[in-house]
Image (tube, rainbow, N blue to C red; front, top):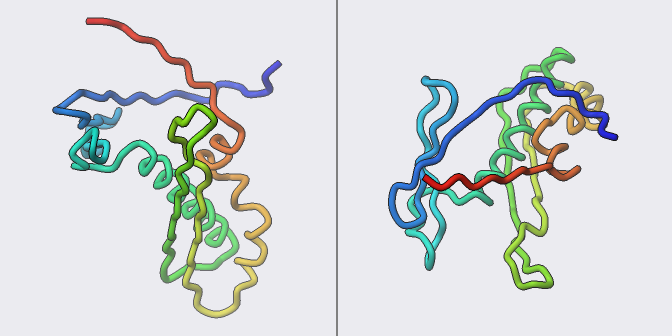
Length: 146
């Protein structure tokens, strides 16, 4: 029995542009459209591929969670960067998969780092994307032919 309770939804859409390039349209008109593409030999590498988008989402969520925690403790970082390294692996069936994602967050703090120390034990727990990926996702797929 699942302990998860629905808290809302959002939607986005993809439309094939050419080759393996898709234009992603988000559910809010003020969000810019995004082009995603596969690297060669499948695509033309004209935009980030899904693995890169997932890695960016994980790192962005972690950075935002850390920033929120720091601000809640009265610290105002003068900067916050992240470096992400993704290792791609092949499974037993030789299918390409994400082996692991390494994220290094680099906050720039003025003064004492008491807030940072307090945040280190808890900020990851508030990152929606990272915690969802760590637990695994229920991805339901449906194909509707036009």
